[in-house]
Structures are given as structure tokens and as C-alpha cells.
Image (cartoon, rainbow, N blue to C red; front, side, top):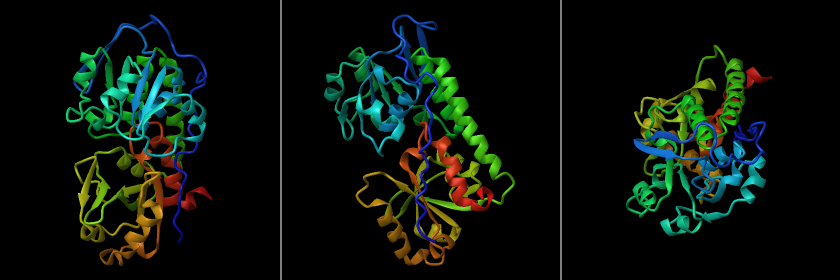
Length: 319
């Protein structure tokens, strides 16, 4: 079987009012105070000059039609979804990877919305306290402080961000649309015996994989699969290739970083060449599926990843 490069995130629909301008001034529901990962965030009005660090916060903003409230992005992992191309082109990219405090400050933001924990790092001079001392509010994607991370985390994140910008109706419409996509996919694979799945992110001495605490575990389960390292009590973690062989997955998901120096095909060839994995069903039958890294983090993509993955795991249910 050839490598199944599944387009897991091609169909995200923005909310019906995605082209409307962002809320301005004192909107209903403000001032607003949010407890965000242990930090109190107070907003007197919807933010107007936002910098997003990492891709999933930016795509949430675009899906909510909030690009006019953005003055910078940074550190994309994958190409942006096609429906966000125009919005993304209208927002400057401040850095290809983690921006410095000075780079973010140059955009004069009133809010910095970070994705991974590394968006706010004391070691790099970009701690949340540093921004706050400069009069800039911060918001951390709640994947960084939630365990386990599930679709409910996605719904909560979207609704919270929509509230922060005074557009709760847009947030609810987006959640309803994404929930509909998940429900339709899970209905197609209801009652199937789950297919054992191993997620390969990276690693040569050991394999960096998705554990049971991350959103990928929920995506796999809803798609009619079983994460063979679902008992790993972490979002991500290292396992040995001998452990992978022992758990004998029938399908291997390869994360595509969209610019990763090794690339998906190189990762596939690496796994095929590992002598420990020669007897693993997924390797023997060459059952590989590609997911973007964005499909495995809290943004708009995981809900859309369920249906294409379900097709790859249970093709008979989609004929």
C-alpha cells in the first residue's frame, strides 16, 4: 500500500460573519476577566492589535474573522489552510520561528496570544510577566495547562477567544459547524473494532510520539482507532522502537511539519529501514497516514482531522 497522504484539514469553514470587522470600543460583556492558565487576564474592550505566536492561535483568529485585529504572526509549522490565505497575507509575519520580545514590541500589540508554552519563556525574555510590565496583555492557548486535552478543550478555546473579542456568536457558530463534522465522521465508524495506531512525530534513537493526554489521542479514538501509546500519561513523549514493535500497530500516522528538513517520505523510509519494526503490521503492509502537526494541537484543525483519518482506518465505511 502506498503512503496515504490524507488531506486532514482542507475543509474548515469560517463562521458566517467571518468577513465582518472586529468589534470595537466598549462592547457588551466588557470589562472581561478570564483566568487563563493561572494568570488573570482583564480586558476593558476587545483587543485591537494582536500578535499571535505559533500557527494554531492565528488560525483560530482567522476562522473567527478577526484578522483586522491582528498586527503580527510568528512561527508557522505548516502552510496555512487555503481558506485563510487572504487573511494571512494581510497580517505581517514577524518571525519564522520564536520572535524576540523586541520583535513583538515593534508591532505595538495590546495582546499577545501564544500557542505552545514556549511562546512565553523567561529564558528568552518573553515571559508573560515581561509583557504585562510593558502594558501588554497575554493569553495562552489552554492546551498548555489542560490535561487531558480533548475536543472539549477545542470548543472551550474557540468560545473563550470569541468572547475576548466581543464576538461570541461567531464562536458558537464555528463550534457548531466543527462539532457537526466530528459527529458525522464518528457516526460512520460507530461500532467498528478500533484499529491500533502509532503516531510518529520524530526521533532516531527513540520515537517521539503522541501520548494519551493530547488531542491526537481523542482524534484517533473518534476516528475508530486506538493509540497504542494511549497509556503514556503525557501529551507527547519518547518511547523505544522495541516498544513500538511490541505493540504492533496496524497503522502509523506520520506528522508532517510542512518544511521539516527530513520530510514525510524520509520519515517513512526511516521507519521502513528500522530492523526492529520489520514485523510490525503497519510497516509490513506499508499502512502510513499523514497528518499535519496542526491536526494535533488545539486549534481549528483537529475536529476536521477525524473524518479523513476515519476514512484511512476504515475505508469500507466510506464506500
